[in-house]
Length: 184
Image 1: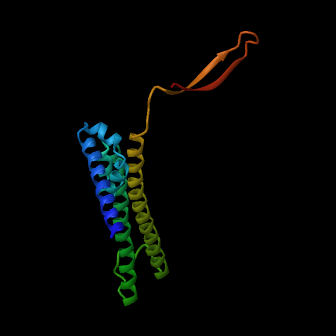
Image 2 (image 1 turned 120 degrees about the vertical axis):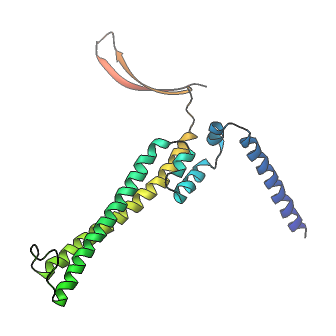
Image 3 (image 1 turned 30 degrees about the vertical axis):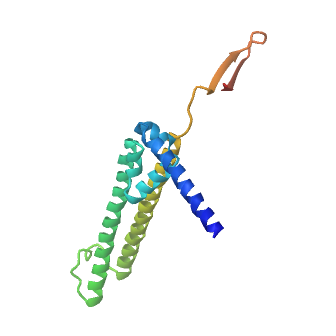
């Protein structure tokens, strides 16, 4: 019984303290709230998983939307195109098996084995279109997550990384290097 009461008290305390953190975050302006909220990357990834591009809209990275929808639309178009072409070859093959040689490939393709090769060719590219679609969809989710993480990255003047060119006075040999400065 004591363990149950302790567990209930602990959960209540945790929920109240978490709610107070959320209330403090909600009072901040949107841009600062997105940067300080530790759930922003997971929210952006979830939004992009539900609707492609919504995670980028959530983090206000609108310039990536044409790439996302261009890639998804192109791969969907090629999927539909290759499916139609494969169906044309399959229909012509079925007609020729029945003895009907009045298909559109009669003057171009004379053997049934060539029709089967054409059908397999378009089916392979149709399958590749599916892989491209899934790959672009997954990259969309990854881009939303990484973009939201980079919003939270600390970019202050206390850390600088500068290339430099140094001319030595004694030997007159130029030297090139990189300098990393960390100010406290």
